[in-house]
Amino acid sequence: MAHRSGIRRCSKSGCTERAVATLSYNYGEQAATLVPLQQYQEPHNYDLCLAHSERLTVPRGWSVVTAELGREPSPQDEDFSAIAAAIRDVAVAEEKQSDGDDSSQPELRRRGHLRAL
Image 1: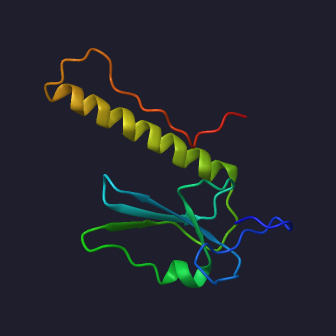
Image 2: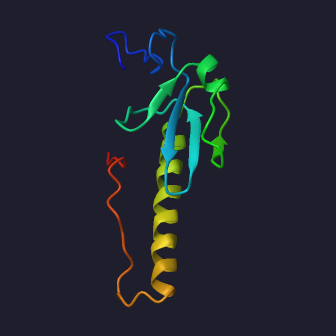
Image 3: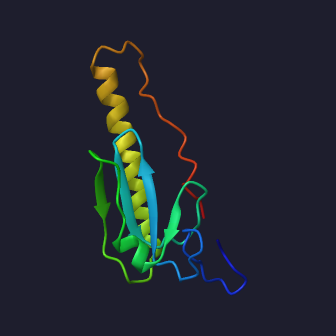
Protein backbone atom coordinates (compact mmCIF):
# COMPACT_ATOMS: atom_id res chain seq x y z
CA MET A 1 0.00 0.00 0.00
CA ALA A 2 1.45 3.38 -0.95
CA HIS A 3 1.54 6.09 1.69
CA ARG A 4 1.79 9.84 1.26
CA SER A 5 5.54 9.73 1.69
CA GLY A 6 5.79 7.52 -1.41
CA ILE A 7 7.30 4.63 0.55
CA ARG A 8 5.48 1.37 0.01
CA ARG A 9 4.95 -0.89 3.01
CA CYS A 10 4.88 -4.67 3.32
CA SER A 11 1.57 -6.27 2.30
CA LYS A 12 1.59 -8.71 5.24
CA SER A 13 -1.06 -7.94 7.84
CA GLY A 14 0.30 -5.95 10.77
CA CYS A 15 3.70 -5.35 9.20
CA THR A 16 4.76 -1.71 8.85
CA GLU A 17 8.23 -2.32 7.42
CA ARG A 18 9.36 -0.80 4.12
CA ALA A 19 8.77 -3.08 1.13
CA VAL A 20 11.87 -4.23 -0.77
CA ALA A 21 10.46 -7.01 -2.97
CA THR A 22 7.49 -7.75 -5.20
CA LEU A 23 5.92 -11.20 -5.08
CA SER A 24 3.76 -12.57 -7.87
CA TYR A 25 2.25 -15.98 -8.50
CA ASN A 26 1.90 -17.87 -11.78
CA TYR A 27 -0.68 -20.53 -11.06
CA GLY A 28 -0.37 -22.18 -14.48
CA GLU A 29 3.35 -22.81 -14.02
CA GLN A 30 3.06 -23.35 -10.25
CA ALA A 31 5.74 -20.75 -9.62
CA ALA A 32 6.20 -17.76 -7.34
CA THR A 33 8.42 -14.92 -8.50
CA LEU A 34 10.19 -12.69 -5.98
CA VAL A 35 12.00 -9.71 -7.52
CA PRO A 36 13.23 -6.33 -6.28
CA LEU A 37 10.39 -3.90 -5.61
CA GLN A 38 8.84 -2.97 -8.93
CA GLN A 39 8.34 0.64 -9.89
CA TYR A 40 4.56 0.29 -10.26
CA GLN A 41 2.22 -1.38 -7.81
CA GLU A 42 -0.02 -3.96 -9.48
CA PRO A 43 -3.27 -5.33 -7.99
CA HIS A 44 -2.25 -9.00 -8.19
CA ASN A 45 1.26 -8.58 -6.79
CA TYR A 46 2.35 -8.31 -3.17
CA ASP A 47 5.00 -6.00 -1.74
CA LEU A 48 7.12 -7.65 0.95
CA CYS A 49 9.70 -6.41 3.45
CA LEU A 50 13.10 -8.09 3.65
CA ALA A 51 12.13 -10.29 6.62
CA HIS A 52 8.95 -11.61 4.98
CA SER A 53 10.66 -12.10 1.61
CA GLU A 54 13.38 -14.20 3.29
CA ARG A 55 10.77 -16.39 5.02
CA LEU A 56 8.65 -16.94 1.91
CA THR A 57 7.18 -20.42 1.57
CA VAL A 58 5.16 -21.76 -1.35
CA PRO A 59 2.88 -24.77 -1.79
CA ARG A 60 4.53 -28.18 -2.14
CA GLY A 61 5.55 -28.80 -5.76
CA TRP A 62 5.85 -25.10 -6.60
CA SER A 63 9.10 -23.41 -7.56
CA VAL A 64 10.38 -20.02 -6.44
CA VAL A 65 12.17 -17.73 -8.87
CA THR A 66 14.15 -15.04 -7.06
CA ALA A 67 16.32 -12.11 -8.03
CA GLU A 68 18.83 -10.09 -6.05
CA LEU A 69 17.02 -8.13 -3.34
CA GLY A 70 18.06 -5.06 -1.41
CA ARG A 71 18.62 -2.72 -4.32
CA GLU A 72 16.32 -0.16 -5.81
CA PRO A 73 14.45 -1.37 -8.91
CA SER A 74 15.27 0.23 -12.22
CA PRO A 75 12.85 0.77 -15.09
CA GLN A 76 15.00 -1.66 -17.10
CA ASP A 77 14.21 -4.48 -14.62
CA GLU A 78 10.49 -4.06 -15.12
CA ASP A 79 10.85 -3.67 -18.89
CA PHE A 80 12.93 -6.85 -19.07
CA SER A 81 10.36 -8.79 -17.04
CA ALA A 82 7.51 -7.61 -19.26
CA ILE A 83 9.38 -8.49 -22.45
CA ALA A 84 10.29 -11.94 -21.12
CA ALA A 85 6.66 -12.62 -20.15
CA ALA A 86 5.38 -11.50 -23.57
CA ILE A 87 7.89 -13.71 -25.39
CA ARG A 88 6.99 -16.69 -23.19
CA ASP A 89 3.28 -16.19 -23.93
CA VAL A 90 3.88 -16.14 -27.69
CA ALA A 91 6.03 -19.28 -27.46
CA VAL A 92 3.31 -21.08 -25.48
CA ALA A 93 0.69 -20.01 -28.03
CA GLU A 94 2.85 -21.22 -30.93
CA GLU A 95 3.46 -24.53 -29.15
CA LYS A 96 -0.29 -25.02 -28.69
CA GLN A 97 -0.79 -24.25 -32.37
CA SER A 98 1.83 -26.79 -33.47
CA ASP A 99 0.26 -29.47 -31.26
CA GLY A 100 -2.67 -29.85 -33.62
CA ASP A 101 -4.56 -26.62 -33.05
CA ASP A 102 -6.04 -25.68 -36.44
CA SER A 103 -6.23 -21.91 -35.84
CA SER A 104 -4.09 -19.87 -38.23
CA GLN A 105 -3.22 -17.14 -35.72
CA PRO A 106 -1.27 -17.67 -32.49
CA GLU A 107 -3.28 -16.79 -29.42
CA LEU A 108 -1.99 -13.51 -28.01
CA ARG A 109 -3.35 -12.57 -24.63
CA ARG A 110 -3.68 -9.04 -23.40
CA ARG A 111 -0.92 -8.16 -20.94
CA GLY A 112 -2.59 -5.75 -18.54
CA HIS A 113 0.63 -4.98 -16.66
CA LEU A 114 2.49 -3.53 -19.67
CA ARG A 115 2.71 0.21 -19.71
CA ALA A 116 3.35 2.51 -22.66
CA LEU A 117 5.29 5.68 -21.93
